[in-house]
Image: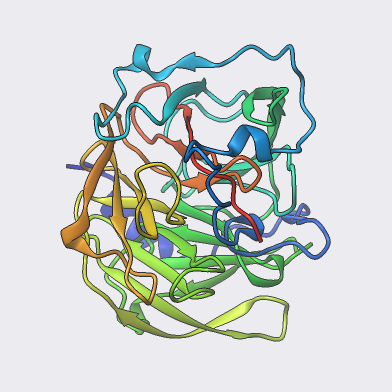
Length: 348
């Protein structure tokens, strides 16, 4: 069970004034900002049914970049049901980010991106969002980091497992345990903070994401609370400053495992016979999959283990150009970014 002795202190702190805005906004690419960084459905499988990520990727990269270390050294294991079709790699710690308690992560919107955003000191009032350059190999897969991360200037306190770009390039941040959602408009330098308690959302949000194009419920913003797994659909309306108001929240069926970040997978990737979500389960130290219903919500009875042996699975993201699944860890040790390859690329 996630033990945070400072929970009461943070709840009190959340009622105080937030940190002053900095100068650096999320600066998404022009026209960017859709679910999964422009994500539509996954690409069609190749004729032999094998993953098409390598063949489909057109991203430039460095053919001399060595493959990252296997996850086996961490004790991380892909479930036998999927082990023959997927490979897990340890990208290690992110240079320049505090070594403990990573939050959610995402690439900037746009094709063949090499800028990763990731939360540091997640859930804490001193938490920040960091930017770092990533390196792609000769097949377009992200295999390492370049240089050192730098902190972005806007308020990213309490950021948890949900870090995602949404419509019009707005950056959305789940904030735990303050039960809030943060938004930074495209090119903006300040964070709009929305209290979720008045909408009936159980404290506090761990993960969130937009349902991608091609799925049931496409375009809807989904949010899950930690630790209870309460699942919600949020309704948005544009505001006057380039972000959004949250106008309503409707509750779905809770999921288990102490969920944090989650991301969608189209039917057709190996062993995914139906549209699904991958969920980082912090409390269960695992990654799970669920099939989704016609509204983009997970169906609890379909839960299947995908990856185990973790310590504190936190964020969740898929690179649209390769389909690779990334997640971060939140623990008291040396945290890291892990990637699973074998999924089909995401297409618009």
